[in-house]
Every structure is written in C-alpha cells, then in structure tokens.
Length: 415
Image (cartoon, rainbow, N blue to C red; front, top):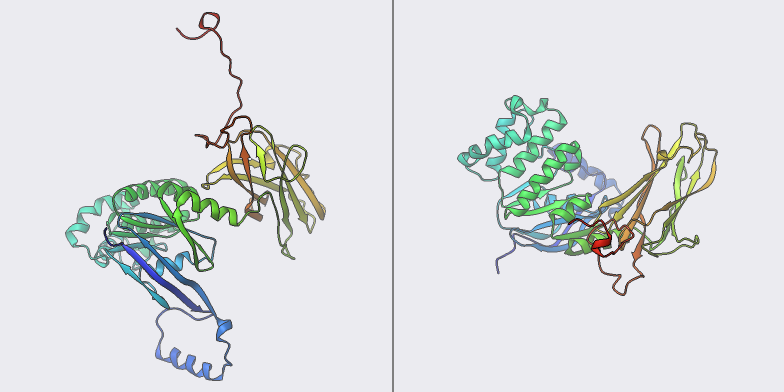
C-alpha cells in the first residue's frame, strides 16, 4: 500500500485575538514586549484555537472535500497544509509538489506581468522552465487574458486576476492541489469552466483537497469529505453520508425556532413542516402535499415590500425546488405593520422519497437580504403504498401518473 500524499497528525493552530500575523519589525517586537509587561495575564481570553487536534490522511490521486460553516477552520487547515502558516501543535507530511489556490492571486507579485507571474509560480512549484513553457499557451487561453499577458497584474480587474490565478494553479500540474472557496468570486460561466477543469484534475490522478460551501460541487467532485466544526474534525467519510449529517446538524427533524437579533427589522422566528391536517411532522407520504409554516417578526413598518423565498435541498446539497412569494401577486401586502405573522404554503407531491432540507430567506424589492435561515429544518418523504417503498428513486422528481394497460388491438400503440 502506497504512503499517503497528505498526512496530518494532531494539527492545532492557535491565534491571538487582535495580533497581526506576518513579519514584524524590531520596533514592533520591543513595543509588544513593553506592553506585555504592563498587561494583566488574560491569555485565556485573548486566544482562539482555529484548529484543534485534527488528524487525517489523503491517498495519492484522491479527491477529498472539506465542508463546514464559516469559522470552522477550513481555510486555516489549507494554509497549514500548504506551509503558509505553521501549526501550533502537530505536523503535516506531504509527498509531492503542492499547488494552492487559497485566495485570489495567492503568490502573485503585483508589479510583475501575467507572463512573469506564471513563470514565477511554476518556479515556486519546482517546475523547470521547459515544463512551464509547454503549458503556457493553455494557461493563457483558459484565463482569457491574451491581450493583457504582458501587463502588470496590479492593473487587472478582479475577474482577470481570478481567472489567471486559477489557470496557473490548475494547469501547472502539482502532485497535490489545494483549492479554497475562491470559485464563488467569478461569474457563472467562469465557475462552470472552473468546475469542469476541477473535474479533469480529479480524474487525472492528482491529489486534491477542495474546500467549498457548494455542496453540490463537493458531491460531484469528491468521493470522500471531511466535516470541520469549530476547529475540530467531526468526521471523514463518503461524501453523500457526510453532507447529509452536516445538513442535519443545522436542522431539527420537522421544526426550528431561532434566536432573534434585537435590532433586526424583520426576521424569521420559526419554521415548521406540517401534514395535511396541519400537524407538525418529520415524515410524510410522498403522494401527499407538503406544508410549510413560517413565523415572521416585523419590528418596524415596511413600505418598500418584503419578499420570501423557500428552497428545498436534497441530502447531497442539490437545490431541487424553489418558491418565491413574488410569483403570486398579492401574497404579501406592499405595506407591513410591526407584528408577528404566519406565512403558509403547500408544496405539491412532486419529490421522490428521501430526506430533504428547507431554507427560508427574506429580501427587499432591491434584493437586499434581510434574513436567511439555511437548512433550518428537515423532513423525510416515504412511500407507504408498496412493501419496498424505502428503495431510493433514480430521480428527484416523482410524478404520480395514471397508467393504462390495454390489449394492443384496442389501443393506439405504435406498430
């Protein structure tokens, strides 16, 4: 059995709150020492563990996803693996050249041209000039910056900067590629292009660690996924199972009540899944309508209009259903007075059996998000009509259509 491409053993990373990370001048070090001599000992209140005792292995050629909420430690983990920052405790063992795309243009020198930065990044990866030259035209074509390749990158737009940064990271062929959530910065066409390239990389035998909030992309690209929460490694396992448990952690079985922000103008205070009789439930027959009740608290008068959106996600993070209150005129009055409101809607029986998660958002007519409750609650659809109703369906939409069987001579069947 071959040795792992990445082995993390007991990784921990501690940051001091308010402390600037990076190189310090002698003057700054002296000032820090003098201030510390007059400061009371409050170290336990001034530090935070971004990672705590994280251990895992990634095999050569494996594509592993990393998911978790904001602040879970995902980006810190990649920075430690890529040697950008040293761990406070533990160690990382790497076998192979490492390329990373952790932030837009990481490793780029602003004063150098796009051409010079391509060669610089290749040299950092340990590639020979001939190797870089062989991939140069492909990198430039992918990034779509042919006209500006000899312009200093400080003059690039953010989109050009991102395209070139990703092209360099994906085409210079390091044995290990680390990709953080930078794909969300580009436009839709570029994201699609990047995900296509990531798919090529994933099937090309290179080791990839992919951090993303796009659970659908993670499910598509990664066979295994790691879930981080508050700096701790919750689990590593098959992507579909890990994603479903990750979503479940943020959702009650059938209802959710939320803590409210005292200064918020409007916010969702509760969500519940109900059956045909209006009773809260965690499980419903797949041939019955799905009811959703949303409690909303309005703390000031709204005259510009408020709109509600509901998204239903499958267990792998795929968005399978979306409803917007703007689609039906008169659902929400143009003027809302302060108070507590209950919004109800009924979803037709279209979804196949399985587990689903519900997200609800509120926005203004100018598309400003006022509140968003992601994966707030969950429900399961079951088939009670057949003895093997728990078998997974091959699609997400399950239409209950009438079937007619007739003798061929009495019907209009094709000959």
